[in-house]
Picture 1: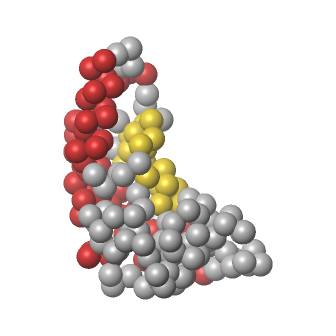
Picture 2: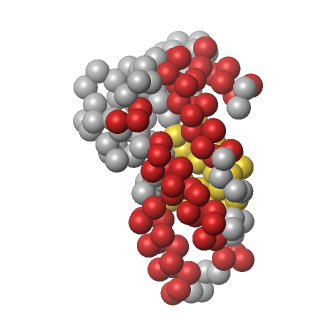
Length: 157
């Protein structure tokens, strides 16, 4: 798998793959899966719609399996550094919101030719609940390690 950030940004994905594949020696036959990171709280343009467009374009251009290798949603985010994308504002910052988020992203991946899965980053990293974002808590467990209801989403997607 080749895994790049900004999975919502088609021009980044297109530029990287076209540049690297044109330069060689990497060939499209050298990898089977294209993975992307997709976080909604780093850029207001990181919309679900843009993710869908990007993954669809990647799949149709390179005919590879596609995964969202990293994503997450906050339980707490009172002072985000960046505005959340407009098509995510109805999703609550809560365990229920995490469930909604994962279902929404899973539906996009499932609707893409070659879409094969998604991974939550990092569901249980206690002592680093913000995971590098300005959101205080993005975990699927509380600070004592007790599973939140959102962890059950994996049984339904």
